[in-house]
Image (tube, rainbow, N blue to C red; front, top):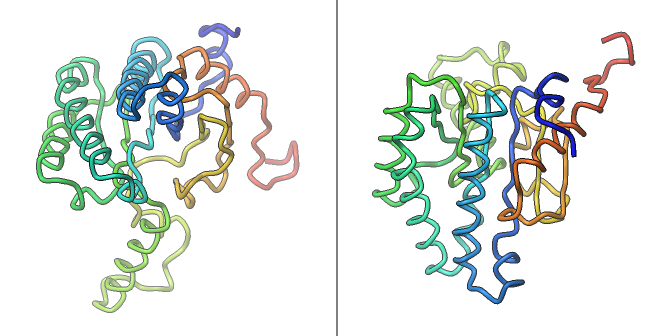
Length: 246
């Protein structure tokens, strides 16, 4: 197992994003209800955030928390997830403030229950001056929906004469995404053995390194994050250039 100091010495990625998958399967394998898996998943997220802030020192961490497709799950499970999210943010807010965590959200916050929106807004406001870790929560998020929304905003701006279409390039387009103030992820990790992005950061992932693990999210420990980063550090990121000429 690679050590944390060795990983840090080799240069950390600036932004790591994680698709936290496998809570339901984790619970099923143990004969538990799915909500028990989500509770264990929240605990895994808590462990990882603390490790990243207190020991590793990443600057940006994005966690795929709730997708637009997740609304299709049973109503009782969705209600549990909303309550779990609200409790998690409320209970961790003071810790986020004291640890220097800057909370931000990517997604359609307006589509969330009022109580969740209010909790998220309060946490964003109270951590706005922090800059030790930017913790980006992908919440009610879908990448295709994000891109369509950006196109709608751009079309409206062009119609109103507020934007010259000739000036629109990929860099300018990125400014209309939820992640406009967040650098693209260097590394995207997905747990549970699934090898797809599932409508997550499709635009932003253009040059991201991908890492897939069979580990179910509740079992994803800080040591596996170090292993994922170590694999990332071995890769040659050329961004389309010829080796040695970038």
